[in-house]
Image (cartoon, rainbow, N blue to C red; front, side):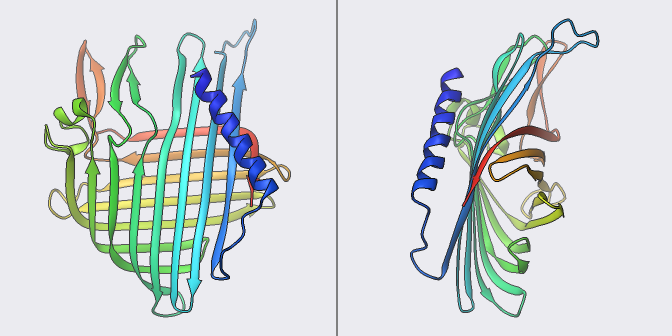
Length: 297
């Protein structure tokens, strides 16, 4: 894990340095390219502290890029996010607290001032293996790169007031869940039939984005994804909601806080009960808070 942290730090410095030395240039006047590289660190330590406490340290790196095209009635918005983070507490060792690869693409043709006919695509997976930990600290293997990976796509329509407020609805969206790992596919992880490596769903999806400035140098970002499978229990809706607060201290230094909630009927989380591992569909939560360096372009 220490090597991973050093590599992540080095990559961020290289990317930041390259961006500063050679700022990106649009190949045509129709493209708008911007993004940010963020490195966050969170640390706490205690010594003879009467109230108690556990020493901990965490580090996260997030790369967030937008590639947007607009010409006449056509627009094509693309977002790529890569995030990885690790944390350590006394007695637990290094554990990851963030691991994601997200690609979003929205092709649109204007129907009116704010409404568009669209074709939407979303892809998600992770970089490394994931584990759950029981009360004794034993780890249980639960995920891996492309286990799962999800691909959602379909035609629809969108309301887009600006880059900071848009809602896309696809009433005929396909969703493919991929589980390439043999041990996970053999137990039917993430909803696949045991022994199979993919699950096909057909239903409706909603993707919404809203970002607002709460005060000077404080921005609040909301991302919501919903999916209902027509083919099986359409009432069991997949939900992924992310809320981020970005507080800008100066040109480079930021304080970021994030909360993500996922409700996925296809994902069963292993839970130890009376020495027996049981699998349940539970609300997944993730919180990240830290101060660090952000380079925007």
